[in-house]
Structure formats: structure tokens, C-alpha cells
Length: 117
Image 1 (tube, rainbow, N blue to C red):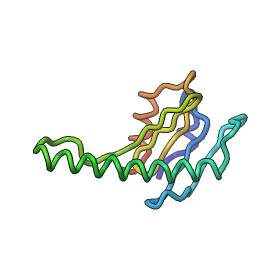
Image 2 (image 1 turned 120 degrees about the vertical axis):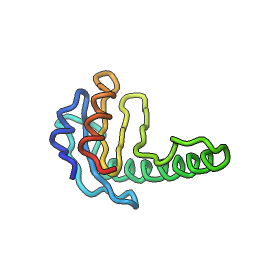
Image 3 (image 1 turned 135 degrees about the horizontal axis):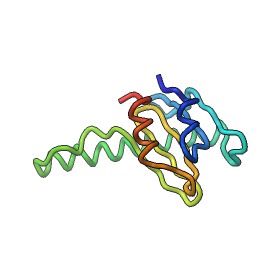
């Protein structure tokens, strides 16, 4: 299981969360002063991540089968880049990062270490 408190210590982290296969928020932590983020917003974000991961999976599988090229499937995570913050996921775990403070590589490494494949 993901260590949400450890993920919240990443540079720029505003929230850390886990979700199920249907995109329902399971657990979350929100950094103090993280305006605009609450359980409702994170639940919607989780649904978006699951939906986009499903689309990316369909595209990766189709590309591999149509071209015979490999290495695109399975999709392990999803990244959403916004104007002020971004969300990254790996498996069923994610983090919201303030763009101006984020270390995306550190976040990807931490998610891979803490998240479920």
C-alpha cells in the first residue's frame, strides 16, 4: 500500500491519494494550505485518471497489434498537466504537484516505489 505521508513530502506535493479500479477515491492526504483541493476534487481526478488510463491502454494494445511493435503495453501510469498543478499516477496511487515547485522525476520514482503496478 502507498505511503501517502511520504508522497506528501515530495517537492511541490499538494495531495496524495489512492483509488480503486472504478476510479473511486479510497484514501487521501491534502497538504495544509492546498487551496481548491478536497475529497470531491480528488475523487473526480481519480475517475479521470482511470478513464484516461483505459483509453491509453486501448491505444497501446491496438498499436502493438497493428504494427507488431512492442513495449507500449501495459500502461502503468498517467500524467495530467494543468496550468497551476499536475497529477501523476502509477497503478492506483497518485500525487498532485504544484508546477512551479515540482520535481516530476522524483515523483515518478516515488510513485513507482509506493504504488501498485
